[in-house]
Amino acid sequence: MNYSSKIIENAVKALSGFPGIGTRSALRMVVFLLKRPKEEVNQLAESLMLLKTTLKSCRVCHNISDEEVCNICKSPNRNHRQLCVVEDMQDVMAIENTAQFNGLYHVLGGVIAPMDGVGPDSLNINSLVTRIENGHFEEVIIALNPNVEGDTTTFYIARKLKTASVQISTISKGISIGSELEFADEITLGKSISLRVPYQV
Amino acid sequence: MRINNLSIYQFKNHKDFKIDLNTDISCITGKNGQGKTNLLDAIFMLSACKSYFNAIDYQLILHGESSAALNAEFYNGQQLDIQLIIEQGKKKKLKLNGKQYDKLIHHIGLINVVIITPDDIELIKGNSDERRKFIDLMISQTDRVYLNHLSEYHKLLDQRNRQLKLFADHQHFDSIILESFNERMLAPCEYIHQKRQTVLKEIQAAFKQYYRSFQSGSEEVVLKYESALNSDSFEILLKSSLNKDLAIQRTSVGIHKDDILFEINGYPLKKFGSQGQNKSFIIALKLAQYHFLAETVKQSPILLLDDIFEKIDEERAEKLIHLISQESFGQIIITDTHAERMRKYFENINKSTKFVEL
Image (cartoon, rainbow over all chains, first blue to last red; front, top):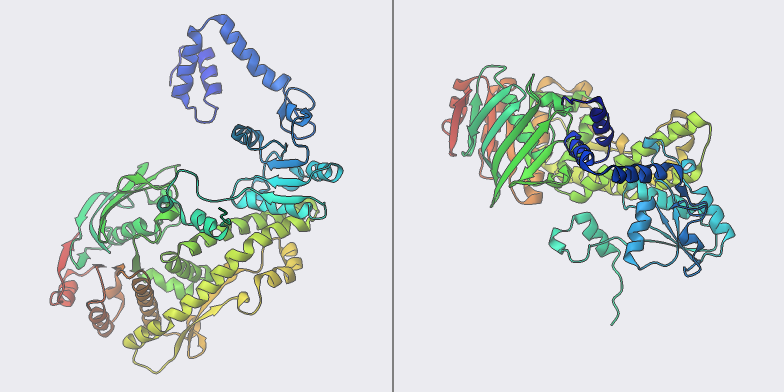
């Protein structure tokens, strides 16, 4: 595409680097911004800058945080005996949205994938082990994605925590609620049969 | 299973090509280089989601173009419109009745075909991966669990091998991470081994019988499954090969090392088979595959014969024609360079037959 201005071209280039945004959408965003009042654009720029300058990762759980220790870790209202291990901050948000879990989190920052050069040392696994050894946790829930890398990482963590006196569980796998069995893929349906749960009346 | 028509767009040497295939037997003739084999490969691709001949997808696109498309109407009791789109730099897209598959492997097993081509001599002459590819495709067409285990096993194997390299690069060893891969590989590996063993046993009788119908001698042929897992469990094998794996920086045991030994009178066919015996062996093996698929899924696959009559003598040809014109065989698509020969062989068969010249 030919742009009449280098400044616009640069802005489009920068925005089209976002996931899911192509040059056309980027151009629409640029044109939109041009039409907005200056203060509003300033505010946007500022809030973006703050992401990089002020935002921290929690020293305890590695979740994204405005302070040294995040609100969840600090909260006296949460169950400090339950810990949920997740891959990244988006997973924390997803689980928080369920309102079904009131324990603490530990964000790994990825999963073990040698093909992508990610080993246990580049993840927050050592800090997890230390946290369990020094804390008063009763249960660790490993909530990673049910794929090859996620499952490998789950096994690795469970092995690392074998000697700690804490109960380890993983999130259950199966049919999504409101769906229909006949449309479920064989793996999921097979797993939900083999991992069936007792039904009590 | 039947294919009613096929259209090919910018695929290999076809610019835009359409053909009706709604007879029991279609004989497609033409000179070399007209794209006869490519036509069969197009049908194979709509079944297996990959070419029988080229491993690299973008090389399948007509030279100078950026995309290719295959469309065909199949019938297995209901109409199945299958469309495959290959675009440069993108993932292949496959649609069934207009709906795109999330994952290509979900399609495997819906359309079953068996292809016999002169290139199949590689099954005898080539490396063990040719033979593993053969048995993997055959089983995958009938067993979704096998296919999933196979894909998972290979993902884990890649990760494990990379990890072994990383240990060497960083001069650091972590037994737990290796254990994490090992543990996850056990179930897929045992399943695949078990299944390969069972299926090879199952096709043995049909294979021998087919071989015997092409070859009149008294030689004994056998398909022998060679695998370290025949004698030890994968867990034990991994343990005992740990030092070797660390030294060579890859996984030295597992079903990715299996082989099927083709033997004639107890000796390797590769070294001791005559040309005639080799041809009989391959055709018998492929017909055994056909038999297995037909029995397992209770539906005759589509049989694709690529330039076979060029390569075998008249006696074998007549036996093959006699076999495949039986009731138990379904639709057959044949390519050949000689229109005359095809008419002579297939004109008097008691099946609907059509002759097309490219």
